[in-house]
Amino acid sequence: MLTALQQMDIHLLKRQGHSVREISRRTGYARNTVRAILRTSGLRTPQVRARASRLEPYHEYLRLRHTETGLSAVRLLDEIRPQGYAGGIHMVRRFVATLTSAQKQAKRATVRYETGPGEQAQADWKHVGQFTDQTGRPVTISAFVMVLSFSRAVFVRFTTSMQLPVLIECHREAFHFFGGLPASILYDNMKQVRLSPSRWNPAFLDFAGHCGFTPKTHQPYRPRTKGKVERAIRYLDDNFLKGRSFVDLADLNAQGLHWCRHTANQRVHATTRQKPEALLEEERPKLAPVSALRPYAVSVRRTVDAEGLVAYGGSRYSVPPEHVGVKVAVIAEGGRIFIRLGEVVIADHLPAAKPRACVTLPAHLEAMWQRTVRKTTSERHGPPPRCVVSFETEVEHRSLDVYAEVAG
Image (tube, rainbow, N blue to C red; front, side, top):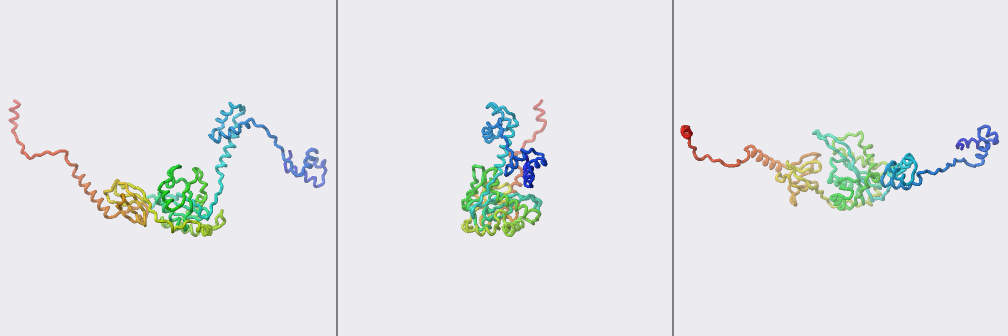
């Protein structure tokens, strides 16, 4: 069969007025071939003769077994030979390769899911890096990113902890930044949200119920279902973080908010073809008002360590030393850190001004010092004796001659 270009040459020679004999002489093709090409108005395509494959009767069985079990071509060959297959392994391998390719394409395929105003947000963490503070200690910084799915408006906050109280505070700041909160928020399977595939974190569910939004998580191994926040994280890394320097965490957060307001939310988005800030004005009336949110106290359980300190939010806070080893509740409320034992507040602190700080009260230090001094004094004098030996009666001194007489 002649190629498309060769057939076009024959038609061109005919339009130039050449006869079939002349076209045959010039091209070298048989006159019958030339006539057959000229009789068709378009290009002739080769007819592929379908050949029956010895593996074809087993296609459905192989497709089902490979989908269910992922068996190799060798294992599948062992199963279809008793059924009558007389071919070789290479044919089975080629067929299994087509099945594997189709499965990979199906996994990569993602349907873009658009939501209406106020219906959904997506949130995730990004690891920024590990840095060294003024004292030489390493500090790990992470970024909390939330994106409103309709407007693509972005909020970011940088933290030194990803614990639940910090995550909750990040949510509250994001709601105030957007001017409201959506009906649902989509997460990956982070431990602060889900303890296991079948079990939610009850503390986070309590916060979600308090605020009135529905938490959702994407399917395991399918992170593309929250692609909006994934793309926002890549944009944050490339457009904001790379090549910049920051004085401290406060400076990083200040510049991050400025970037959100004046860059990320003012650019023309590649998908919506509109500025997120403009769409946010349209979306904001559909968000639940922040003013309706009641104060929410975040409480976590901690054990007082041997130094009379409680770890919370990356820093430590003092309590009276008599509570060493006791489990207490730490509550962040109204700009204060309260430490409770049952219903009694045993310590009240201002939040730490910087990460890894040690916040103490003078009374707690004095009490700990007094307990330490008593312990040290006790150890210096040694433990109490096991028994008492009294030497009140004077011991009689005898002459050695007495013993000599007894022996003789």
